[in-house]
Image (cartoon, rainbow, N blue to C red; front, side, top):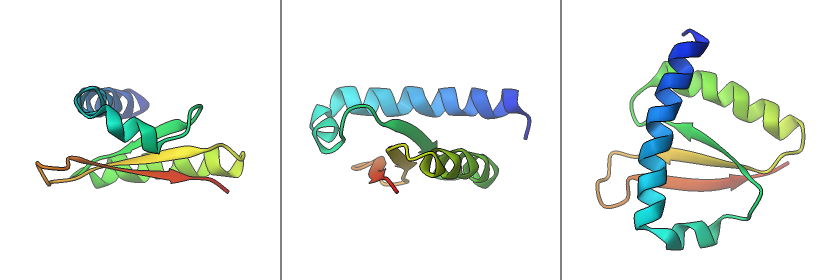
Length: 85
């Protein structure tokens, strides 16, 4: 997957996540400030593989990361997992 395509897909998913968080601000209370969000698609394995590489790199650097996983559950479309080394 080209970097351009990865960026386009991540921007689209980021927008969906941002809308979800605006509608569900209580979710932000579960996440510490200053974290990096890495987004995972409910259906795009290639994008997820690329994003996993980014996530692993950030964790190696000691960064706190939120793995934001898009689900297929309409009542809970995102699963947010805080990760750190």
